[in-house]
Structures are given as C-alpha cells and as structure tokens.
Length: 283
Image 1 (cartoon, one colour):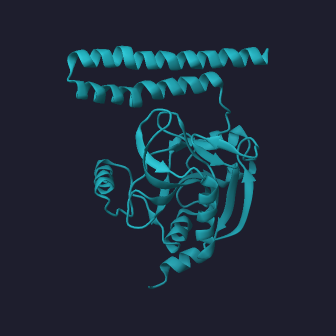
Image 2: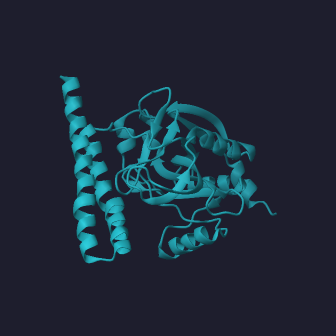
Image 3: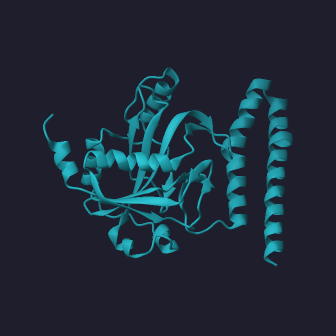
C-alpha cells in the first residue's frame, strides 16, 4: 500500500511538471509572442515562469510528497528549500555582534530598495560592498533576524555569509529533532540570552536557482566546510567556547538539500563575554 501511495504521489508530481511546462510554452509564450515583440515575449515568459508558475508548481509538489515537518533547512519566500541549518550560537544579540565584529565580519544591511539597488550596481560593476544585504530566507515562520558576512577579496560576488534566527532558551529543553522545536514562531526580546540558529553558506558568483531559474548568487555546495570555517573564525578570536555538535532533522550519513551537500550536523557553541571586550578595545 505504501509503495502504491508513493507511486501515485510521483505520478501526480510528474503530471504537475508536465502541466507547468505546457502552460509556459503553449499558453504564456504563445500569447505573449502574438502581442509583443519576440525579445519582449521571451522576457515576459521568463518572468512569469521563474517567479510565478514554477515556484507554485514546486510548492504544490512538495506538499504532495509530504516533506518532513522538521526542517533541517530554511525556505525561500516562495516556500522552496533554501540554505541548510548548520550552526547554533548561544548568547545575547550584543555578544553575537561582538563575536562577528571581533572576527572581522560585517553585519548585513537590511534588504530594501536602496540597499538592493546598491547591491545590484556593485554586483554588475564588481565594486566592493562589505555590508551588502541578503535575500530573505525563512525559519520559524519568519525571515532572518540578523546576518553577517566576510568578503572574499574586493568582489561583492564572493563572500562568506550566515543568517541567524533568534530562538528562546526555553525551547532548548526540547530535542532539536522534534517538530515543536523547529515550528515555534515566537521571536524573543532582543536583550535576552537566546539560541541563534544559523545557516551559513559561501557565495561564489552569479547563478540561477535550480528549480525555478530565478537570478541569485551562486553558492558553494559544501556547507559543511563553511560551517567549520565560521566556527574556526569565531574560535580564533576567542568569541566562542564549548563547541559541540548535534543532529538536525533525520539522521543520515550524507544528504543533499536543494543543490547543497550537508552531513546533517549542527555546530553548537556558547558566545563568550571576551568577544565584547575585544570589540570594545581601542584600536
């Protein structure tokens, strides 16, 4: 019975994919091509396909396949798989900022019209933008609370970066491999000592998303190495201690999330008060 259900699910997803392609090619493009110049018709078709039709088809497909309720990865605004969760730091917001400041990382600007325009201009002209904004990914039902980055050279196209979501320490009593832990949507007060649940990846250039072909940063597949790099950066400047490792989601030796390769380990470390002292010291 289980095999039959799985077969039916896969047939439904395949049918959804075929329907989406038919809609893009024979409805959207055909209609646009009859009313607009060819180049504009292609642009309109791409926009509708990449940002409207395919995201909705993928979301529906994920629901049909009944993905696990315990996310070991973030999701995009379209509900598509995003970056794997691979880091948890324990401390206050001030400690978090001090830790990454002492390691030479910059806090990302909030995403808005001005910062988006500056990022686009810097990306095209290949000019430095050390506090460039991040696209919004979601965890616990909300976008990231804060993010940090470290440029690779002077190019805005390459950078180490990590997003964080605050989670109350009261939730720490729940095992990380439970739905209650991940599905909590409360955002704790800024002054509290909390869990900073993070997703760290490395940008390497320009790319298209694999499922919907939207324009985005290209990222290194190996998020395990990036997780270890971030921990090493914070350890080097004495910003963390008591580093350990736990599992997120289902325990598998190796799995792929989106195009990422993740071993499922989440590095956990306590932020130290020494980081604040280092960042406050005169240069």
